[in-house]
Length: 433
Image (cartoon, rainbow, N blue to C red; front, side, top):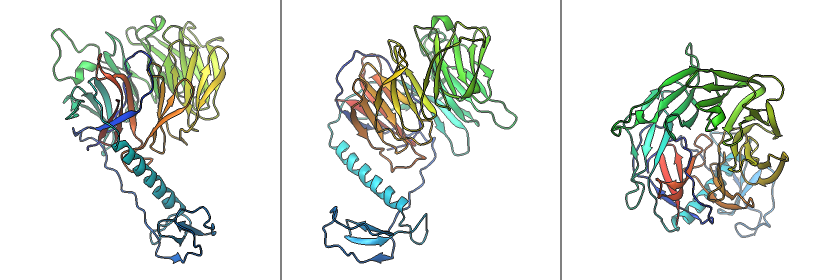
């Protein structure tokens, strides 16, 4: 197995179907662009107290002694120390870490027993953090992602920046997904910017007559989020969410619309049919901007919803009557935009402070999210039932939360639905049987 971090592309569409279990595959093509994982230290204390219980290991009748921990495997008590201690690392934190690791390994054993399945090919835009600072980004081809080899190919035309990539999305300027929009943070005297790059720049060979297309950069400091518009009333436009501002920029004319907000805008998505731009804020507010309003006057906020914590992702459903949102408290809600009421909540997601994405796929009827506990959870979109919990193939660490990308056609027009999971430099495939 090998390692990498990835950003996901928008999946294709497919007719609605049942929710079969996912199957796992591992990639065997190395992309050497990630930081190595730090080992997790754990152990037991040399200081121990004899067990005062005659119960068998794992029995619920074992008494709970203040300041001591009962190990069911060794059938004895161990003394607990507060906080971290190098001489005696047996703390509540290390015990919790050990239990999480044990659970993760059990689930991985169950995954290994699953029957393997086939997938096809497609492309994926990736952003990799590098040790020296900054990011390396490019496109990988998944055309070899099928048995028995399960190979992926990273195109050699990689780009490097010494700045952090804060947000990224596919842009459809010349045709569908013809460009990539990157939001780069500022560094020293270099201001932040939004850069539009032709996808063909990352491919080694271009088809005959295919020109690289437009490459341009816009000075936009400190963008938290970005979104590309496919709405005819905002043609050739993209939006960036800033600290207390939303900017809508036309890449052809350079014209901009600005809208003041009361909080940082962490998530954005354009509606396709209605002339609306939905925004999720650090304050917990979700609001829609009516793109027909050309100034900051009254009336440009079309819809307002509220979460109790910072909103990290907003996803508009196809009929544009409902919106899915997740926040930094681990709450995932489905909102009715007509009544502005929450109609469904999806339980089990774990988040305390991280900017984590949410993936909604109406074609397959599923919702996918990765929590800070490094577990990927899959719910039924229609009844909020938790269908599957997939552990990280790596030891649990909040610095190595997996990135996932789901596609209804993993690998192209005739591809099968599947989930790609990346942890550090390892890429895994979970596909339908």
